[in-house]
Length: 324
Ligand code: ASP
Image (tube, rainbow, N blue to C red):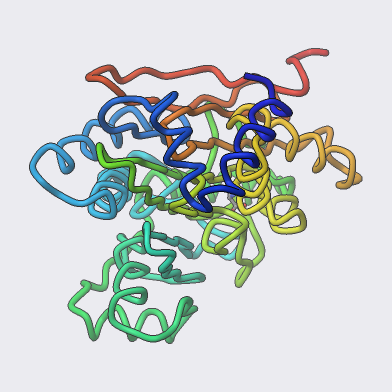
C-alpha cells in the first residue's frame, strides 16, 4: 500500500477508533512473532542473543539490553564498550540509551570505565526520576549500582589510536561497514510491544568530551509503542541536527513505511547538512506490525534482521553508490 493510501486508511480508521488504527492495521499486515533489527554485521550476533532472551521469557526491554551487551562485552568489536575506539586524547568514553514500550527512557553520555553503558542507562531509567546522566555523575551512579570500574582501552584500540597519532591523521575515520562505532537495536515482541537500545564509543578521534547522537533520545533512538521504533548510526552531529530517529518514527505515524521514513530523513539530512557527501548516516526502522527497513547516505551500511527463526544481514539501500 502506498503512503497516501495507507495514511488515508489509517486516518479514516483513526477518526473512528483513536489508537485502534494501529490495531486494525496490525490485523491486516502483522508479522507473527517477534522481530529484532540491529545495525551493522555485529547485529547478527546481537540478534541471536536478543532472541534467546525473548525465548527464555525475557521482556522486549531485556532483549534489547542483553542483545547489545554481547557486543559491549567483546573487546574485539572495537567500537562499542570494552575496546571501543578512543577519543583524540586516548580515552574511551561511551554513550548509550534505552527506551521501552511505556515511553520510559534512560541515557548516559561521556561515561568512562564502565563497559556496559546501556545497562547503566537502564538503571537511570528504572531507578531515578531522570533520563540522562553524564560524565563523572554517570560513573559514580554506575559504581553505586554495582557496576565494576574497568580499563576499557585494549592493546588493539591503543595500537589503532597510536597509529593515527603517529600519522598525524586528524581526519575522523570513515564510518562504514568495516569501520563504524555503534550498535543500535529495535525489537518487537510477539505481543507487538516495542523497545530499543543504542550503545557506542562514538566517532573515533572525537574531541574529548564530545557527545554524539547515540545517547540522545530522539536522535540516536526513538520508540513509540503505538507507531514504531528507529535508531541511527553514522555521523552523529547530522543526526542530532535533524532529530533523526524521532523524525523517522513521526513519518511512520503519518503513514510512511519504514523504508520511506528512513529514506525521507536521509534525504532531508542530505538537503540540510552542507557537508553531507563524505559522511555516512544510516537509519533502521521497525513499525508496530513488524515491517522493517533501513536507508543510508553511503553504500556499505548493513543491518541484521531476525524474524521467524531467520537471522540475516541485509545491505541497506543508499542515496549514493560507491565510486559514484
Ligand atoms: N553515531 C555515532 C556517533 O556519532 C557513531 C556511529 O554510529 O558510527 O557517535
